Image 1 (tube, rainbow, N blue to C red):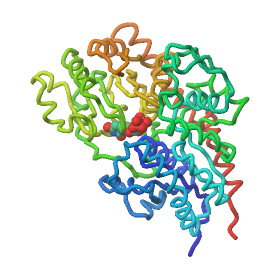
Image 2 (cartoon, rainbow, N blue to C red):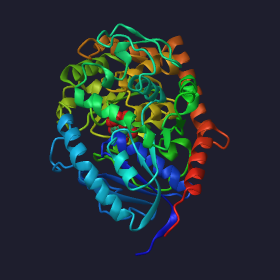
Image 3 (cartoon, rainbow, N blue to C red):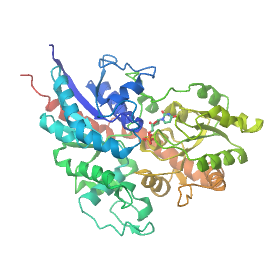
Image 4 (tube, rainbow, N blue to C red):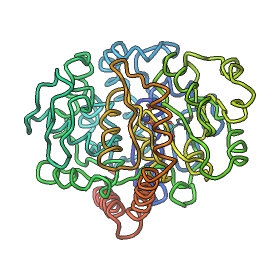
Length: 468
Ligand code: UDP
């Protein structure tokens, strides 16, 4: 069998949209630097990718640059993976052997200089160590979230009583914030298996050679500086699709979980500049009926246009029927789609703001596109990211959510006005523009992220395994 002599990197990730997207985007970046990439993900991804236009679901080269490979998470394709406990328990039991077999097969052909994992496959780190391949972690949330977890799980800093959402947390590099804004996975109310799954990553860090972040230094300077004295951490982002940064796409692989409704781009073309609010809660959250009703009321009462993603599996699966409930006047202003090309949408000049669940990919994409955010977080890192948006980045506002996580229609309207009208909007738009500029600069020659990624690639070249 012939052996590939280029620098080869293997990436291991679950097939969730928010997990695979940053891996794919980093892959595209590495490819542009001459690195060859294989992405290994779970079999359920193969089935979902079957429906997307640009992806070859077979275990073969998608094009000459990215190879996809699949391993089983131990569950059948039709199993409902929103049942987190079954998923976590099964993959911890079956994942290591299945991944190990795949790595054995792949290494017959490729000589991997490194395996890059994301935080949601902590069990993979031991498997990689057993194969004697150096491991890198791609941290796919804000650097601040990495710091909070690190300080918590490694017992570096004192945390207040986490049972009380009003208690104040004081940590280096961050303004004081409330317990309600910590990543929910450390809260006592989080199921034990989830907290332990997160802890597992921090216990395995001594087997990880590089920790890379998809964020960038300039937006979380103080946190990154505060980490320097306790653990190595290198932001290499913003890890987004190259076209968002004005670059040519070297590979057209995409892994959308649902068919993209491209027609929304034409709809946006026909709207005036800065007139549309884009609404999306990412790939995992299910929009509750109350949330949906309040957004619909805010849409009716507002004079803005709205592009709203209600993904399959949302409460209102029949989007057409839902839109029929709008008056003719509202229908003119509101387009509901099941899935859209989000990065292209955010880059469109008609978009004025983004009501988001604050998933890190969505947040970063909005930062790079310079779009103000209206934060409606739910769980994991989202409340922390919402706090960053409001208090650190200052490129958006946060909705006032009640104990049930819902915001009122009036508050949604208030936030829309805040990012589109008057002095508050001017201030937010200015910050959004500054962050966009910083995002572009950091990846240019001499920029912080550019230096970090070059160093990583130099390490890979220096450590390129010799062929026996
Ligand atoms: N996304 C998309 N089309 C949509 C909605 C979302 O392509 O209609 C993409 C979005 O660009 C982002 C990812 O899905 O890259 C969502 O990741 P995020 O971390 O924001 O949230 P998650 O889905 O993990 O909760």
